[in-house]
Length: 166
Length: 293
Image (tube, rainbow over all chains, first blue to last red; front, top):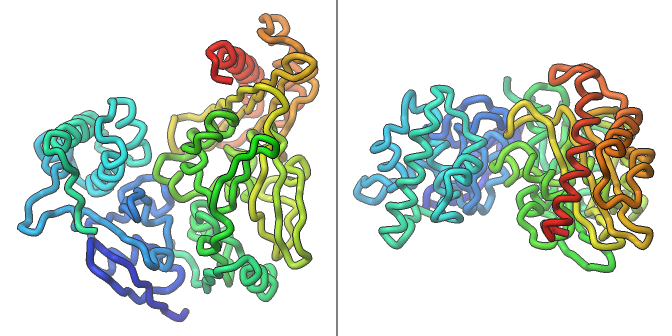
């Protein structure tokens, strides 16, 4: 099948990839080397492939790469600051021990990123509902919820929301 | 398993989309959000040669609300866009409940309300609400435009009356004639990412002849079910007592014809249709009292 070019902004950089129509955004990103985006169930259930597309959290296995044309795609790689400093969400996940095997972590962080931009001061119930589409098979949900709470607090105190490269 | 190879077009107008669909006939499939069709393609359950992506057609977006007409939802409106829409939340409680019960918050950023309806799967969460609000689908195809009453739309599991080349452009849910409230209760095995074992939409309307109810059921028959007899039993009652609720619940169970599958048995679904009917009617009464009408 003929490959076609798709042009989009990936973590702040204009990017062109050559893909088949059947290539999902998930597979295109991984092939390009963006391996924070994990391949889990590949049918929209597990959430470990979550990326942020134009400010909305999306499961990248449910999006064809060609659909990213003209959009802005953000992954965990784009959250890290210019000098390698971690984003407050990443820092909070480390401090709260919200990582066991780590496979769900990038998806959890990207969902949290989109969620906290919209809901800077969330309740516990709102956090649980927001992360309902991200599965942690180590079942370490409680520290994850604490990490989201902590990241929200840090950013409220900072007075701004580090944007990530966009 | 990967998807088999296919071609994709992303037309920028309805006319172009219909032309491509006409050219490929039964070898083409339509994609709106894609959260259903991509999964099916990955399982090789469907293998279109041509996938027509509707997401670049400007006139398919948007939600508008006119009190004399109702709410009009475009084909590319995502489930979250409808769930968050102020007029939808205020006047179409059964629909917004259904939106929030669908899959999870991420999939709802992609999946569309009309895609759920057009997939025509018996457990589709939007379907009971479309039946209860008596939606009208606006369709564009090779023969021009036509409107289809939702009651006539779904003919069986994954089957509807659309002919090849036709696209559902938007749907109108008329505003109930009188102050109203509505709810959708979904029974699943977990709160997120599950298909309904039973779904019940109830709309309660303060009409000229008193309170009226519109009850619709999903996942309990090949087609969506309206429980007309149960609606008649409840008509005129603002807060039906237990014996009357019981009678209506039995009438609702008599209207459905569920199957046994991996999610629930036929017998369990019958019992749950009864239970959820009572809960849905009571919840509507509660929402009326709470001023949420």
